[in-house]
Image (cartoon, rainbow, N blue to C red; front, top):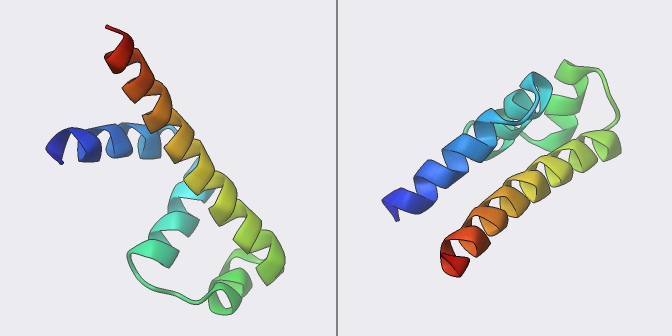
Length: 72
């Protein structure tokens, strides 16, 4: 589990500042998309896409690292 968290943190740090902020506000602080969209200044639909892409980037980074580890 600690290894997974370390990989997540490394992937999270690779996101843009905006992606990190949005992801933190949604996943840690629990802000609703509509509320956060007003803060960021974009439509809720666009915010959902930012969150989706950030999560997907993190997942792909972890998947890539696990594939390299499995091949070794």
